Image 1 (cartoon, rainbow, N blue to C red):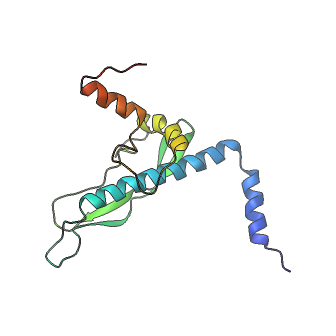
Image 2 (tube, rainbow, N blue to C red):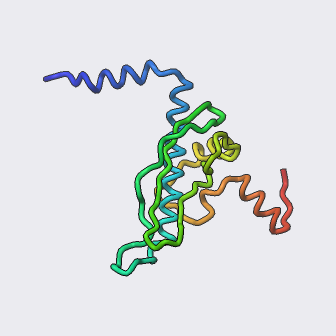
Image 3 (tube, rainbow, N blue to C red):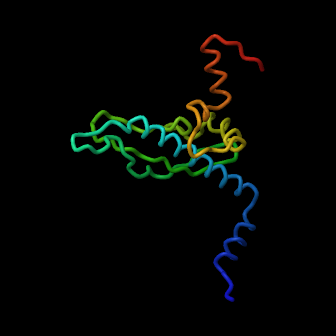
Length: 149
């Protein structure tokens, strides 16, 4: 029986990580999953839009360069996906969680603990499932409803 030294060294390196680094790693994974869900929703919206050859007009097209976003747990590196619009309409993917040209996202800092507690499902059950509690309060205020604190 042979030892799996790669597995043992990976486990040992994980044990050497600080608590702060583990939290950052978890935050990055949650943010990436949430961004992927947003992208899937955008692609689903344009699923029936085809070009002359019958191909989909809006398709996934790799990633933008990795960038750092400051959160409550510190800087987190994120990779934002790109889309290609073959129809020429100018469809672009802009994440609501990580807006373009923003290094520090107040919304992400507020949503991160909620994403952790709720978990990010592969397929949302309803359109409003991934909205944050703050978003629901804002929507209720806009509709004229009263919000209790």
